[in-house]
Length: 228
Image (cartoon, rainbow, N blue to C red):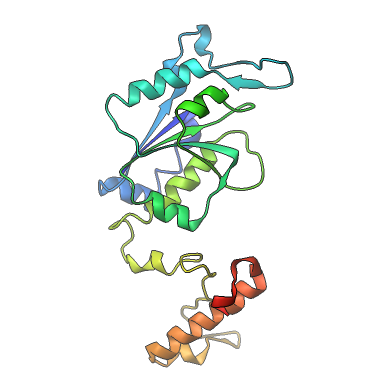
């Protein structure tokens, strides 16, 4: 999979993809991530990419010309399955969306800044608008990093145990059950006996019950009648 990220501040993304699972995915050749500086595509003095909003008001707006210059240049070499704009008013990102996007070959992510980007670019080039939550960040870079991590770990071969991702929270609409590791007893706190039984059917049932319980306590909005 190839993911290109168009940013005004590419340095913000130096670290997220240089460590841990994303680093391994890139080293294995399973994931290619390119952070592209939007300022390389402007024709304005001092690498300007923003200007005042028509109609007045506080804040600046990212101009359409550098964005179009960038995407049309990139599209000469890459056909993008999705052009994603990271924006607070997009659809809220979730695990189902991560699963869908992990099946794509090429993605382009646009990191917004200031008061956003010229609406004409959204109308004519963006295919999907995504938010990582109901709050506002200084720019879309952190949102892009979240998407890349959530999507990248689902690519076959990225995780050493590919079944691990299938048991994550939200994969089946429920939160993940509690997990335990050694030592078996610590300060009088013990591991549930069922997990030590070796009976995989009992363990599977226990984990499902615990997932239901945890979801009901923490995220009852995720439950429906069929799950109970």
